[in-house]
Image 1 (cartoon, rainbow over the protein chains, first blue to last red):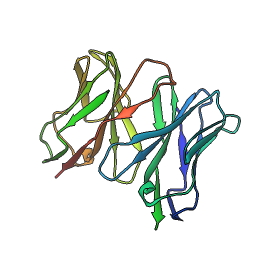
Image 2 (cartoon, one colour):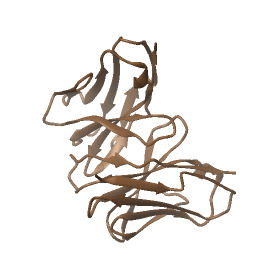
Image 3 (cartoon, helix red, strand yellow):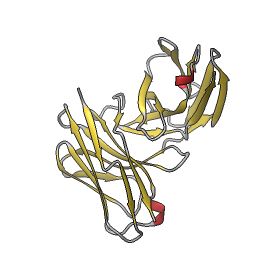
Length: 110
Length: 114
């Protein structure tokens, strides 16, 4: 089955700096790669996603890149703000089922 | 809008007691529905998924079961809870069988087994 590894497990940045979270996956058939933000005590919220026929996607301060050859994808957050502090999860989806990374706890210090 | 409801929001149950968690979805028909469990500080583990009424696929052997009595209702159950069943249970919905469709999560149920 699919295996997704996510790094780092924790990340601390100063407000205004950029944050990068990286994931690798094992199943070359995976074709959809979402990123979720989870605040304490709440369900994960989809913040951005990318499909296998696209290399990069951007939405305001958030961008995702995908390298299908190397089987890795990354989340980039620029100009971080304290409200960006949360746990971020990547996932790889194949045949209707998603496999999630273990999450990255992002702390943005004001 | 498409909304996912889960209840209860929190639950404390003794070991050996039964469990029933409910998930309902609004604003969509024939969704794919999923149950995930999230242990503290960990990622999401898929427990069950359903592509239609009465159709349940189990992903991991465990003490839990799932049922889908109606198109927009998904229930997670146990006859006898174990301490290891504690966690944050999330219901999610998707659409279609293509691997490229988004998945959205409900607010979750925090279960503590004592």
